[in-house]
Length: 463
Image 1 (tube, one colour):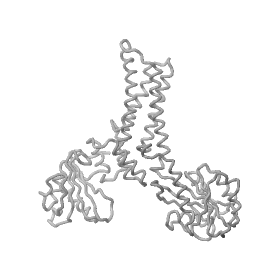
Image 2 (cartoon, rainbow, N blue to C red):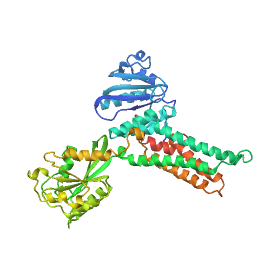
Image 3 (cartoon, one colour):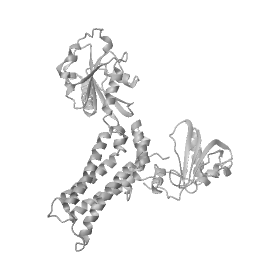
Image 4 (cartoon, rainbow, N blue to C red):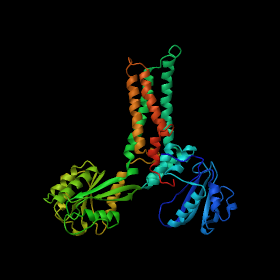
């Protein structure tokens, strides 16, 4: 991605499109103040950084006022980008904010590319690449826990510190090896066993971090919870009740749901995607068969399964078969409001069936709300196993995971080379060099244009 020269003053709308109370036009670059003053009715008011200014903006073409705005000026290097920055807060009308941006461009600013403000922050040393990716995580976060993890990494530079520690450890080991290779008469050959142990310690730590992050991905991506069971067991009613929204069509006719339906909610600060599925039964109807196949696939792909069984009906074989799912299961005895006080019903004996030994169960009525909190609590308990900020400190993106996995492969290659005394020592330095290059790219040092394009492509124009 070709960004503008740093001496170019860039401008963009920094708030989402649409109508709202406030919209923001952001400028960054050496002429930010000059461009802003060109639009102001009283330009001398924009004198000091850190001083909020209220003034009218004027259309330079005809002298007509556009809006009374709030101006937030920041002098370099004390700004988001590290350059002179002005943020113009207008009222949130679409035509108005577009007009203000057009007048800024006419006064000498250049339209910013996606992610260009954050790119300047990195170039000017305000952010490193891992913090830049945390900005992305913060923007795209769907739940409270992801928000706090992203903010924690931006504030504490947790990931950058960890990667720097790996880089220093590997570089020190490589230096010990290269010193002997380059000056064999002056530097004794280092103990290969000691070098191997030191590398194995670093490799083990990398593998621990990767495992921790793989386990923590639901914090970013969300947890999929599938609802499965027989037709007319009440899956769609339960789906709607959990969402507190009439999202799925519910009728007394069995087999109303023919396809999977997904919707996301928050549980314990983590996005949870509920998947309503077609009822499981043998059918000659081609459409229903496709729906059943999709239902089975959805349950196989989900992290948790709610097996919904109608308390007023015998449990069919297809529902019992769902107990073979590998994912954690909650057996939901549904339509509890239709059972008399004695608890009598065709499925009552099944509640003590040996097949349900060790399976968590709860009584639920989507009609009255009975047991809904128990279902949500069970989902929350599964989320309790996810690491917290104190244990994790950051969350790797898929790009960072792939890169760190490649580092682990290179470290393993160096360990294997050191474990074979007959191999020359310099064979172990090659994978170490590769590992150092991968870590430098993760840290944003000498990062390729392709890597930066991958990161900044996900930013909006105003960020």
